[in-house]
Structures are given as C-alpha cells and as structure tokens.
Image (cartoon, rainbow, N blue to C red; front, side, top):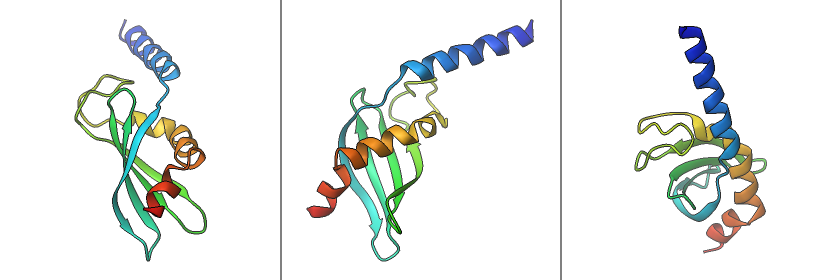
Length: 109
C-alpha cells in the first residue's frame, strides 16, 4: 500500500511539473561582482512567484543556480518551504533571460 502511495505522489508531481511553465514578468539586479563575472538577479514570474537566479558571465552567460523565495508556496509542489522544483526549469529561465534580452537591458542601465 505504501509503495502505491509513493508511486501515485510521484506521478502527481510529474504531471504538475509538466503543466507548469514559468513566464518572467520582471527582472532586477540583486547583486553583482563584476570583476569575477558573478551576478544575482531577482526574478518575478507572472504567477507571483519570486526567485533569485545566479549567473556566471565568463566565458559566456551560464546559469548556475535558482532559489525560490519563500513568499508564496511553490507553484509546482505547493510546499511553502525549501524545495528544488525551480531547478528543473533552468533551461526555460535561461532562454527567457537571454532570449528576451533581460540581462542586456539591466546591464545597460
């Protein structure tokens, strides 16, 4: 019985992860070390979720970590404490931040 519950909860989590798509609404610089090429961005998503996204600039822009801020429950797993769900969307975050030129706009200011 316990095995079935674990399998069922894993299935639910996979379905929820598949249906969630982060959409970046706003980005601001939270911190930087320009000499080392390290940047921290505060990202607000369309659903109200807030994250910190960490980048390394050299030799090219590379996303190194994502942390969800604990202001609202996680939109994927609905936990209101630390989870790693946003790390599964690192490629989507990177493609939106670079593709929509959020980083270039912020650094030009």
